[in-house]
Every structure is written in structure tokens, then in C-alpha cells.
Picture 1 (cartoon, rainbow, N blue to C red):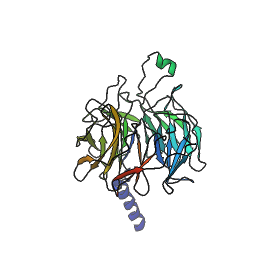
Picture 2: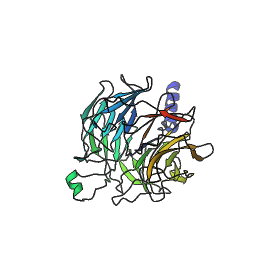
Picture 3: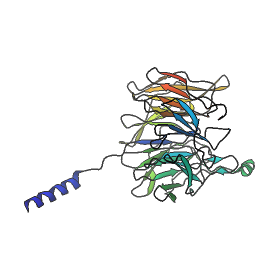
Length: 379
């Protein structure tokens, strides 16, 4: 009897005081460049799958093997895609959704890469075709797709029709491999980024509206209620910025498209649900992307205009001093947005369109060197 009473008291106390562990903060950004994903399972585990990067054969993907430092042709996708999202699911599969084809416009079709079979297979269609949308993996394993733009087919595009910017959201369920409607956002936005907060809510921030105006507004998706509400404004309106989770769980936001955003930075604190200004970068960067290093520093890469030429440039954010300093020299012959992927040994794979060589950043030496490229017959 006494044991049963003690057990009941313990259960009551645990129910009252125990809180589930917080979700790790995560970010997802829209990108004009290719997609790059570190594979976690199957024969290509620890390799990087690059999609949308082989212009001569747009259905092809490429695989970077860090163990052999080689680049090879990977499995073919079923549709060509620009501005698609690529989300690694909990089962190790990769969801590639939307994007645009030059002749077909924005796609509803999505597909799954299975690392075990090393193949892409079609899966459920999105409710709406969209590209340059945000895609965030939720704690329940579903994927929240939000915003984006619906680019018309070539005939409609030539007629000068407006491109509708989506305010809609939808949810992909890996169990059923289908998309279901989500709650609408208050504002249509293309080129936004998303932040998964420790409480499981998702902050959807920035982007541009249907008139091309950059947005400072944000919205918060609550999966427990299935609703979206207004969030805090950023300090600067920006679309297509880079966002990185720092060691203290704040999110650092760099550059982006906007009247005054390209050189600016700011921080989002999920615990306070507030934005604060950050240090300015030395130059305005567009087509910007960033990744955190093992040291806690952040490598930033983007495009600048100099002497009527567009060239790539890097910078480094140092949390200890809260300063952005000049980064290592990058190949200036490529003005195409890049992807940054952290490898298992802490080095960073830099990739763009694969007709150009990849590059490798080594934090130990703070240098960027040429990486492998596809063989001539593969290009």
C-alpha cells in the first residue's frame, strides 16, 4: 500500500515537473543555387549529393566522396528543377519538392531519393506548384512547405503575366507520402527562410512580396494548433539571406536582397522571440550562403560587383568578438550562387554548377583550394 502510494506521488511529480527535451534549433533557407545534402545512410553515406548542378544534363545529380576526394555522376532525378527544396527526412530519404522547369513553369511534382537503392522515385504531388519556397522538417517527421513563387510556363511568361507569390503552406507526411493543406500565411513570400525553435514552432521570415518588395515581417507556425500568427519584425527587410544556428542557439542572418540588407546582419534569439542588429559585413553580398565551422565561427560566401564584373567573395563571422572579417580568397571566375556543406572532418565543400570545379575550405589552414570536377565525358 505504502509502495503504491509512493509510486503514485512520484508519477504525479514527474507529470507536473518534467518537461520534454527542447528541439534543437534548425534553419532552412531558400536558394537560387543547387541543393547539397550530406547523405546519412546507404552505400553513399557521408557523401554529398548535389542536385540541379549539371547544366548539360539537368536530370543528373553528382556525388562528392570526401574519402577519395572524387566527384562522379549520381542517380538521375525524374524532373529538372531550379529553386527546389531538398529536405533530409528522419528515415534517411531526401525529399526534393517543387522547383521550376524552363518550359513547364513551377512544378507540383516531388520525388524521394532512397539512399539504400540509390534512386529517385516520384512521390505525391504538392497542392500548388512553387519554387524558392522554404521547407522545414518538423519534430513529428513531417515537412512544412511555405510560400514560394509560381512561375508560369514559357508562353505565359512571354506574355508578361505576373508571377503569383504563394501565401499558402502544405505539409508532407512521409508515412503516406502525400501533401495536405496547411494554414495560410498572412503574407505571400518568396525567398523566405525558416527557423525551427526549441518549442517546436517554426518562424518563417523575410522574403519578398508579389511586387518584389523585400519583407521584414515574420510569421510563426504552431504545429500543436495548426495555425500561423504574426511574429516579430526583423530590423531590415531581406530576401534570400543566409541563416546559421550559432553555438548559443541564436540564429545569425547575413545579407540578402533588399535596399539596405546586403551588407547587414542580425540575430534572432528563439528564447526571447526577438531580433537584434549584428555587425556589418565589409561588402554587400548577394546570392549569399553560410555555414558554421567546428570552431563556432561562420563562413560566409556571396557575390559582389566589381569593375562591372560579378565575383565571389568570402567573409568570416567571429562570435567571440562579434565581428565580420575578410575570409579566404575564392575562385573569382564563377559568379553563380554556391552551396556550403560541412563534411565529417570539419572541412567545407563549396559547389556551384559542376562545369566549374568544386572547392574545399580547410578551417585549419583558413584556405580554399580546388576540389575535384567531373570528367570531361561526364560534363
